[in-house]
Image 1 (cartoon, one colour):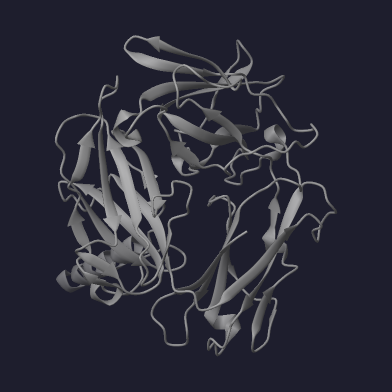
Image 2 (tube, helix red, strand yellow):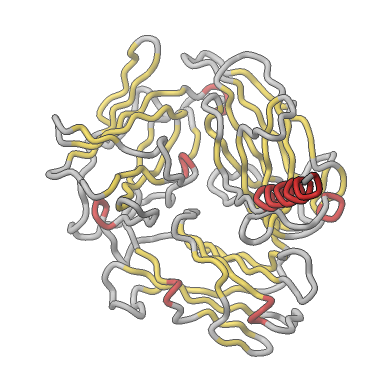
Amino acid sequence: MKIKYSVLLILFLCFNGNIKSQTVFKTQIFEENIKTLQTKVNGDALSAPIILLNSDDVLTISFDEMSHEGHRFSYEIKHCNSDWTISSLSSTEFLQGFSRGYIDDYARSVNTTFLYTNYRFFIPNNDMKLSVSGNYIVNIYENNDSDNPVASVRFYVVDPKVEIQGKVRGNTDTELYKSLQQVDFDVLTRNYRIQDAHSEIQAVVRQNERTDNEVTDIKPTYYSAEKLSFVNNRKLIFEGGNEYNRIDFSSRYNFDERIKSIEYVRPHYEVTVADNFVRSGEQYQTDFDVNGKFVINYQNGIDDDVEAEYMYVHLFLPVDNPFLDGNIYLGGNWNYNQLDETSLMNFDSYNNLYSKTLLLKQGGYNYQFWYVPKNSKKVTVQPIDGSYWQTQNEYTIFVYHRPWGGRYDQLIGVKVL
């Protein structure tokens, strides 16, 4: 009986260990007191978290803790496979130095109604340099509690071995210039050695940094010694969507027509956004958005990180009829495109509208209205914001290589269309 129990215990521990190793990591916040998780490459707030291997690129990761109290935060870097599960590499194989470090660069907010402390750290830094390409996750902990991260951040290190050429077209394999967009691209190998492209190469295509509709594990349509082609692939047909709605409350006094009012309602500021409306069925109109991203900005300030105010932002979407067979979410990088309670809109049956109140730091934000049918995780923009082949989206192509016998996925090319 004891032997049988021991065998079951070993199997249980192995099974649990396997589950833990298969965790798929995302950029997300886990604790309510952590806000405004940001990444910047070389100081650019609109850049994707992608740095070149063995370059002078610097990734800055920052966040706010909503108090002036002292907190002890640390971070840990892990190397991931292309599917964002932990790779088999040890820390000594993917970096030089230490995989863990303390976050000791912080500053408290100045003259703000909400007290907060801004923390930041840099990758690479004096204690650590990354030595291989691929996907990476940074877990942020408080008091070295490695079982309960307060936030996680995805980033990429690319070692460009190939050249990627691509295009986006409205003439897809399923319709002609209506609501969809198709991505085609070629990978020019430039004498880079690939023995079996079908088994060694895979690609990932992402629209506007979204993960809900990203296409993974794409194989070449055809290939030669010098070129891998990914064309006429139905997996690479995306909903065109519409330009993002945008708001800017970087000033308390000067704001555009998209904001109805900014008022101080003791003890905090309240931003009321002008009513949105259902744009589906309307004619497409060009607008200047940043494809779901956000920028922290405090006009007339010196340091946005600690002078920008947190404000309650109220958004409304009046409708003729509620969407009874699904839910409405607010999409955008402001919450890292997560479908959760933070982004779920509430329906007010008395006023026949959807509403959401967010606590956001001053700046400019993009957002879309995403419809998700019940018992589904598939997002569609069509029912509210509409979908058009002319929409100016941002597509990012990642090409990974794991040669025969290799132990990790090398990121050998990235292209932003």
